[in-house]
Length: 207
Image (cartoon, rainbow, N blue to C red; front, side):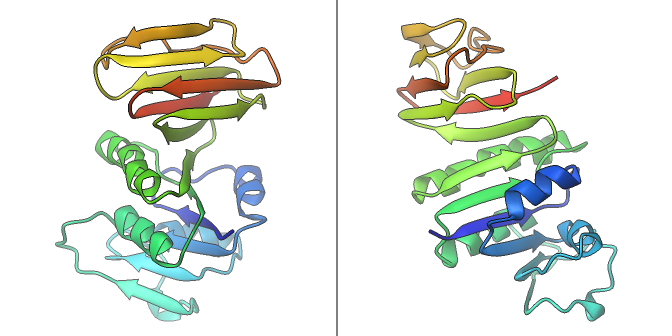
């Protein structure tokens, strides 16, 4: 199994989160200014990708084996390109850090980019200091960890949702895209099971 970590240019995670995610990584990809965080952590980067419009580090001093530069005017974000590279190298698991932050347009788009990984059969997640986000279409089991809340957000109308192992279980409940019914549930067993009939976000979070 090839485990890849992508660090994008949003809000960088706490060091302990990065260390936990990256300790078993086979590849680390920096998307543009994500490299600024990684160089401060003295982390070996396998690929540095982007148009380099936001990176502060002098890329002429970069010792990364593979630097892939794109023009500033392009049809894909730097993270999108980094995800494509993760697929190209045969990743089975991709964890994305630095995908959330002050730019809501980027944050929403980055979350939706998880569909590229899902459709490629890759286990993809976005993790920040307070959240872990995955895209689901079907059934998934979720271990109870340090997160307090479990939320399910259908991305289309009339999605059938089943949730068990939680404080507020649901069975064969039809939930619409604009429904807040499945927000802030809590896992109360060792594992929770979520099953949805169409694409939905599953988010574990803390305040």
